[in-house]
Length: 443
Image (cartoon, rainbow, N blue to C red; front, side, top):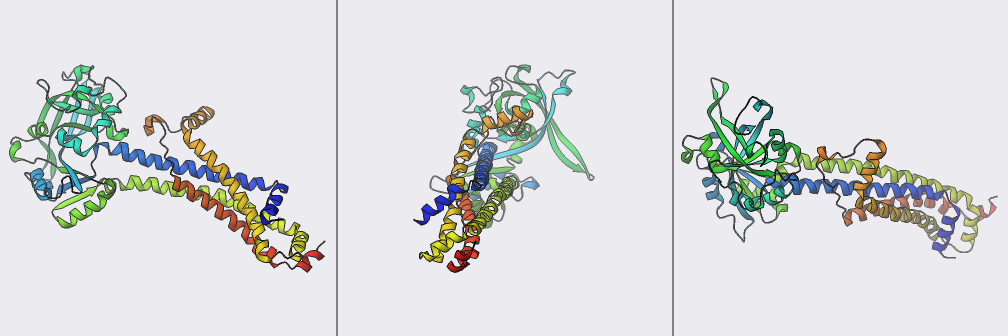
């Protein structure tokens, strides 16, 4: 009788081993679903939340002092750093200002209900669309009354008529009660410069301007889409400054690099070689949020791995009891010439088979749940009467799941090794130490 056939014989005769198989299956399946969900959420953040952000943000260290010609100065420093054969492939300036927005251009008595604060971003759309991905953000707007018309998407901020254009986040537009068809498709904007006088903050050069709503974008992030609005940079300069040609022309410069994975390394290199520039990659700016997801994934994997450890403890107990119960069989096998090493292998193979069966079932169930996670969440929500992963909170049209074959392989290997070690311990510490004579004397 071969070692594997003997292990299979023990496997068929001990149905309690199914408990260990069940725990391994649950642990492996849960770990696959959790890692797939966490990786999917992280991918969702990178693809959706990054939509209006470039790979690297650059600021001249004198920009806080109102540096004139900021864009030209930074562009001049970095002009030799980008091109078709360089790491930096595109650059675009941005200007930022705080603003108050009111839906409509005729401010009536109900204007206070349509009054929202916003961060106004001035961009050169032709340059900006080479750096960031505005196109997909327009497609994600579900409400047709908020969508940018396809005929205008090449440059929605281009002036059309007497009023300059503005692009709103879809959530901001809804709070203002404005769209392309409601309130005439206009917003009234109030802005100014915040300065200090005698130690107190004061707003100077107050400006009011009516904007035509060109449409909306949607990043999928509620807090972002409620806060940011985009206008032409030249329009914002004229709105902010009495002499725009001799005033600050940008607050920051955004860069797109050939390989986004190298953005942090490139940013650090630029900061080192150009001491007057402060460079920050998108990953560094959002490090806390990305690390939070990584930490949550690690914590969940540790917690779920305890399920496999429970299964390992069950395997250890089962193998130990088998050694005790099969003492006479061990004596007979040893007297027939079975070595200690091969005897240990019999029981270790038994534990490995339990791990293999549990892991195979876990992989099948885990991948199946990952492929149909929306249906599972919907069923559980109906079952408990409370919505799980509410769309208005997480903004997922579909739950993002990204299952990586390498991660699944590591989970299976961890489960198998744990099962083998759990079976090996009693095999080598108990079975291998029994002598054939003592075993045959056992009643």
